[in-house]
Image 1 (cartoon, rainbow, N blue to C red):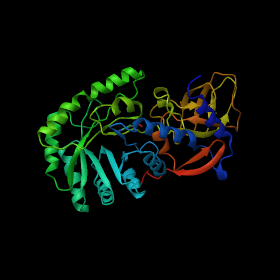
Image 2: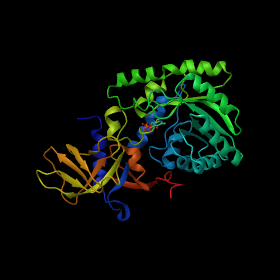
Image 3: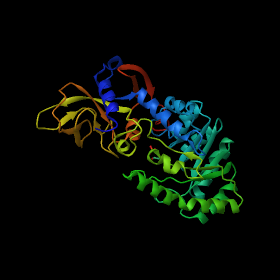
Image 4: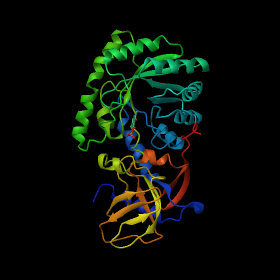
Length: 373
Ligand SMILES: Cc1ncc(COP(=O)(O)O)c(C=O)c1O
């Protein structure tokens, strides 16, 4: 038994409800009660703490859900792309952080246009990135807040020393249209450490360089308004660092196969509802959701309600080896918890919200692809 059994049961029941208006499988179903409990749980954890939740829109790419998170107490939203920034600001969200280094001119133009209507903070990690952002801000007659991204071990983006951070802060402070706002450091290389105590210790160690860096910025005359980082599985360890202001936690809302082992206090709330194509005893079960509708980049999908292990995913199919006694029949619908919700959601235009056994409403995935061809 896992602590998520009631969520798996709820998602399985949703699979057996007739989908709204002839929707074909595979489609994404959201257990609204579980999602709302997850949003509440995270908001309650941060109520009264120094740092605030700034949830990551990249997880669900749905501004309707973002507005629920803000209503529960989030201080603003974090975005991964200019599409998400445009959608968030279009939905009336007044404070967004673009927590990635963006250097494409068309995307920067879109971010600058959004900054005419909302407070927009962006991350930079080089003088060139800062200059490109400054050009876009000047062209749109806006001002962009800027956090200097620091690499604390993930080896993706970020300056690699306190000296480089201070030099970049000095450089960007001289550029028109940019306002130095603070520091971002993301511990993405640590979020999947299985043991919770080890994960927390590794997070504290990775961020250990930040106080000295903040002192250097202070000595150089910079006022640091934001120090941001964090993820779903590190919300406590990153969230309680005394210098943190904004925690960029994403996947706690809908959860997924990868995170359900790491974060048992949050409930799986998203399933890809699929139909059984082939169910032959002694052979893997074949269902009609494949890599074109459910991501395979991280984590293992789980078949709710069955003892099953995923053995393969191809374009249109997923195969599970069943080890229990029960086996779904051909034509039956099943609920699959994606291995990674964030990248699964971006394959879909909509998610279908259910409360108990009843379909309630469509949740539009409206923050994807606004500039894509
Ligand atoms: C910059 C940044 N912040 C935060 C997150 C945390 O997201 P999640 O909580 O979904 O792991 C990510 C995940 O990719 C990220 O890239």
